[in-house]
Amino acid sequence: VDYWPGRDQIVKRIVTYDHGIVDGVSKAFYASGKLKWERPFKSNKAHGVEQHYTPAGTVEKMRCWLEGEEVTKDVYEKMK
Image (cartoon, rainbow, N blue to C red; front, side, top):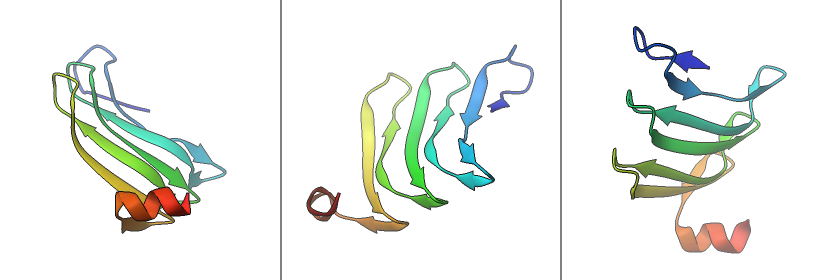
């Protein structure tokens, strides 16, 4: 967990590790504390649906990943 400097313990980023390997959903936050993006990982590779949010909380961008390779939503849905 990383915190915004001088922002009284407001989380900037959370990265989940399993034995030194990024595994799970990593998240970044705006200085306001609202979610900025979330990206799932599996064994150090992006794997799943990544979403970016506006400061208001609406989804502004979405990307799909399969074992570190960016794919279309259709390909992701067929392969997951």
